[in-house]
Every structure is written in C-alpha cells, then in structure tokens.
Amino acid sequence: MSSPAISLRGVRKSFDGGASFAVDAVSIDVAEGEFLAIIGGSGSGKTTTLRMINRLIEPDLGEVLIEGQSAFALAAHELRRRIGYVIQGVGLFPHLSIAENIAVTPRLLGWPREQIEARTRELLDLVELPAADYAARMPAALSGGQRQRIGVARALAARPRIVLMDEPFGALDPLTRDTLTSAYRALHDKLGVTSVMITHDIQEALLLADRLAVMADGKLIALGAPADLAGGDAPPQVRALLDMPRRQAKRVRERLADG
Ligand SMILES: Nc1ncnc2c1ncn2[C@@H]1O[C@H](COP(=O)(O)OP(=O)(O)O)[C@@H](O)[C@H]1O
Ligand SMILES: [Mg+2]
Image (cartoon, rainbow, N blue to C red; front, side):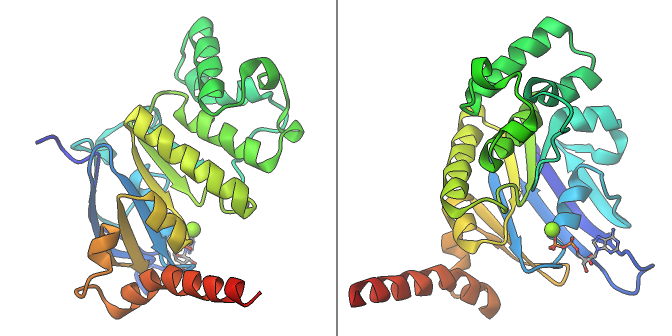
C-alpha cells in the first residue's frame, strides 16, 4: 500500500506558550486521491491544522508526513511545488494580470517561459475562463467568483499532488458558491489530486467530501465518511451537526408547502 498523501501524527500547537492549545494532539491520515473536509466552529483550530500541513505554521509537537516524507525534511520550494493552497479572498496581486498571477509559482520554480505560457492557457481552460478573454485582464476586472477560479488555477499551476483550501468560496453568494464547489470537486476527480478543504458549512462538507474531520476546541472529535458519522457511535454534538441540514430541509419543505 502507498503512503497516505498527508499524515498528521499527534500535532499540537500553542500560541500562548502552552497555556492553551489551538490544535491539540490531532492525528489524521489523508489517503491519496481523497477529498477531506475539515469542519468546526470558529476558533476550533481548522486553519492552524491546515497551515501545519504546508508548514506555514510549525507544530510544537508531533509529525507531519507528505507522501511518506517528513515535511520538515522538505525544502520550502519543494513543499510549494507539491502542495497548492487556496484561501478566501484569494490574494491575487492587483498590479499583475491574470496570466501573471497564475504564473507566480512556476516562475519562482524557474520554469521556462514557453512552458509557463502553455500551462497558464491550460489552467484557464480548466477553470473555464478562456485565455483569449481573460489572460490579459487585471484582477479588478473580474467578478468575485471569477477571482476565486483564478485562485484555484494559481494553486494548481505547478501541478501539485495535494491542494489545501481554507474556506475558499466562503465569501461568495450561495449560487456561485455551489457552482464553484461542484466544479472544484470535478477538477479534484479529473486531476486525481488529494484535497483538504476547510468549510464551516456542514451541508457543503456533506455534499462534497469523502470524509469529514470535525474539530472542536483544538481537538479532532470525529473523523469519517458522512454515513459513518451519522451513526450511533458519533458524539452527540457531531450527530447534531450532521442532522442540521436534514432538519433545515424539512423546515424549508414545510414552509414552501404553506405558501
Ligand atoms: N497567529 C496566532 N496567534 C495567536 N493565536 C492564534 C493565532 N492563530 C490562531 N490563533 C488562535 O488559535 C485558535 C484556533 O484558531 P484557528 O486555527 O484560526 O481556528 P479556525 O480556523 O477553526 O477558526 C483560536 O483561538 C485563535 O485565536
Ligand atoms: Mg480559519
């Protein structure tokens, strides 16, 4: 069997010298090709966990393995090549064109110009913003949803095997968000990457992910496929969380029937 794409082993992080733990003894194996959603309330440690995978945050304790190798043994540029990262609001450089924004990592990695241009065109096709129309535009000339698509294209530029996403579509209207999350899941399957996405939307997590990691107060309180978590063994707060979309759907149906 091949190594997990990502392996967190007992990772722990305190920002206050050990008085409290933002992330406390979290262990998760993410299989190659898997789509994992991390879900939990605000401040539960989701972002800290994700950023320990690509070493934007160093754990105080525990191990992080990327495809079987210690993340601490990999050079920063090697981690950046292997792991794409998408965050809310994207952080596109406003003074660079769309094509230049997408090319940032390949440039840092020293790819030849023709290869970068070809890859940029390919990526724009992949996120359905054709190069002929979009490559030369500036970020300000795009809608929020289009900018998030560019954020995804940029994260995929150097062909990473792993993609980390921190509430990537959180700021978008619900319809755009639904379209983009479905489009991303299709890309995940097509490219065969491993994805870890933070979301605070349980419905999105249930619809999108192979497994859910549920966090509360820095701890991993449940890890499993939706159907497993809904079963009798899950902690009550996890079952309540998973039951919410169902209760809401029922109330929506009732209210629509009233009309
Ligand atoms: N750079 C930091 N300095 C101090 N405290 C932090 C820092 N980053 C996160 N925290 C704290 O760690 C906890 C977990 O934060 P975070 O991982 O961002 O949670 P989430 O992404 O689930 O909202 C919170 O209590 C937060 O205030
Ligand atoms: Mg966060």
